[in-house]
Image (cartoon, rainbow, N blue to C red; front, top):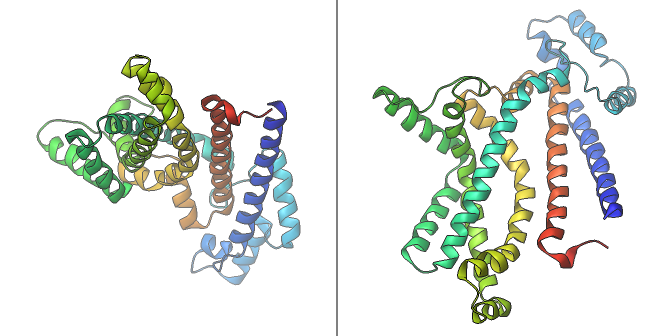
Amino acid sequence: MARFLLRRLLYAVIVLWLVSTLVFAFLHLSPVPVERVIGGPRATTGMLDQIRRNLGLDLPVPVQYWRFAERLLRGDLGDSYVNGTPVTALIGDRLPATLWLVAGAGVLCSAGGVLLGVLSATRARTLWDRAATVFVLAGLSTPPFVMALVLLYVFATRLGQSGVHVFEAGPPLQEHFLRRMVLPWIALAFLLMASYTRLTRGAMLDVLGEDYVRTARAKGLPERRVVCGHGLRAALAPVVTQAGIDLGALIGSTIVTEKVFGLQGVGQLVYQSIALGDTPVIIGVTLLVTFFVVAANLLVDIGYSVLDPRVRPA
């Protein structure tokens, strides 16, 4: 297991290096120069040259990349091109809101999707199963930003006019935490919950038809133990795999969700940075997302060994 973890950590370092290099190359090959974005349309040639010198953009690209890589090794993501604030400080101020949003939506979509999938599989071809199928079709057909706008209109605008205050805009880490986070959680988790419901239902139907499940029932084991102890454990393997893949999509969807609900998180930060051409912030956020995705996939590999002893590394 120790050798397996060391190998995966080495892969994670290589992935982070490749992603940082690719993002650095793509952003420095942008058709819109950074100095033009910062200086504005009325900046003179002398002003643009001064901005390039101040930012170190007049140096050769290999020298810029060497300085960039050297700072990364020290944990320094550089300073913002727009206001000169360290990127780590900008991300640190916005990260708690995004972490709460992603964590709450992740728990809601995984737990809710697995629960609905198990209930649908154990009650196949019943009214409950058909209702779950309708929910899956609706969830897979509704983008997160549409769900966010619908929830905001219904629960904030319509119910707010009648005196029922379900949603309140503002920073999530202050008072009225649940009132500010429940609707963003639902909007962000709705699509993935439908996906996990479908995935769990299909996996459970396959597992419940296996010989060892029929043998467990023939021994007289309670149905709850058969479903949870024998069926669900085997059916969770594809769900765990999908969860590691979906983390990147979940973080990416926070940009629109934070915009709609007014949450000042990392999604809003990267949106503003792209509009302003703030390269260090874009690279910093990209590396942060890559780190979370790599860490999630490492946890998925460990979870495999827990769920299925046959894939445990020697």
